[in-house]
Image 1: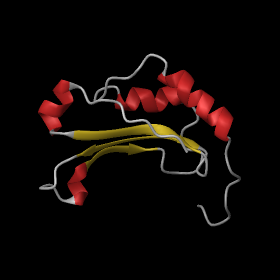
Image 2: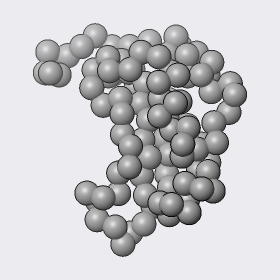
Image 3: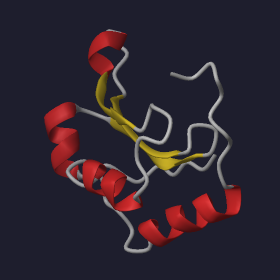
Length: 101
């Protein structure tokens, strides 16, 4: 599994407060993922999540999908798509478990 944490845009921080942004490749789920969460202990867990995609087996096969999803929130390096693709090639994926629906 790979995970990168790009820096949040100033506009996104003004709108939502401090943010944690994660993006990467999840080999066990065979998917790219992206998540944006508020870093505010005064917000309950139910309202902390702004974006979370790539949580189902095989959900996202193209790194551009997750990059586009976090683009409104984060400064994305130009080479991130290539890095994520290389992570997928290096780490591969695992066969779908019969317990995953």
